[in-house]
Image (cartoon, rainbow, N blue to C red):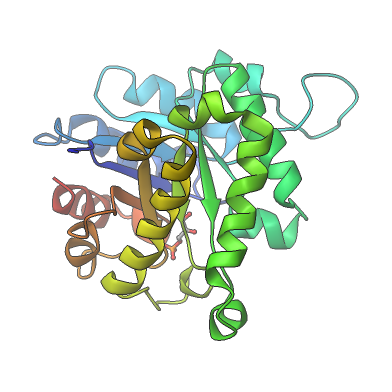
Length: 250
Ligand code: 13P
């Protein structure tokens, strides 16, 4: 199956109105990338700016989180329908920084994925193990539990509507990257788990790798059979690096 590769930039809590201009305008005019899907998940306050600057081009924009509620007295939260107002294509759920700093547990991640689907936004469901869990050979158990909780909430009928991202916690922002073989092993496992439930969904499922992806290691990762693109943190804040990584995915 030839899955269209997807490269997503996760800006995390970085940027400013003025700094974003050059980055977004550079992305808007980048050419030679039409074989790819590309998106940038910007902080909430910059969604309007991303929409304004990217709308005419091929690159979409996304959010980094969503509330588990629809509306009401939830100070500081942002609902799925608010994101839909800004024509967001993708929303991250279950990022390890959310899981560790904001107590987003497996069940909450599943609920958030569902909220995004309810408003037509594609959830990018992040899964991954810590270094300690890998050392203890718990990787497959941990990521299966993370995946199962999401499937339970979204329902089998929606398996074909999500993107998965394997982000080993020990590789995020550390400069350590999973080897292409380690990434492939986990991606293949994840696809296999989905295939047990829905073979067609497994074949079309896009599984991104994230964790210190840089221009000098992206190509080997993207060449793996079950790696369908990347979720890029630090390197997505640099226009040249991000575009170089995108080109390596074509
Ligand atoms: P880095 O690419 O900075 O390691 O971040 C990965 C990540 O967390 C993307 O969501």
